[in-house]
Length: 249
Image (cartoon, rainbow, N blue to C red; front, side, top):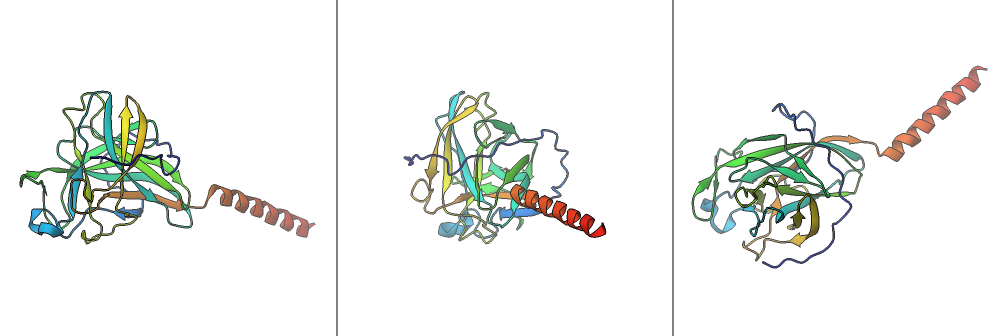
């Protein structure tokens, strides 16, 4: 496949990931839902199949390609993101979320099924493959209107040729589930050692599939005032206190 190369959509936020997730359910609200599809799943859906998974070949221990995507904060408030959830297809023994030039290790990998009771992903050969849910604990402050770019790395950076899970994606129009921020485009990145050295966009339409797709992702956290707004509120409160003090004199 040939993909057009271009720079990142925006500066990527630094990630701070805890490796000590206890396995407890995510407590923070769901900010963005582009989760697993519920309709037109697996080969029984025929031409209308919505689910798909992606990875890149040509791996070497130090130079390989990653699949990624973006999401945008469309609210009027900043997002303090605490968790990102992705899904993989195939062997997943270690997982890393890239957001910038540094990789960060996943805290929790667990078995996953589709919400309507289908338990496995069916590949193009007809074979059923296990799915995994990967939860990343993060600390990302995403301003209103800003876009965050992410890449999934399941290689572990040790022997990528032996561990290459596929990232789950779906067609937004056919999946029957929320598809927040779907734009029918994905990202690729070239990783060399501990750095991302090149990146660009691509579409699965005509590049291995007959329709476009987006990486499935859920974003958890809290909406908070922009840092500048907090400062202004603080100044306002100080002014109010001063006014009250003057009135008491």
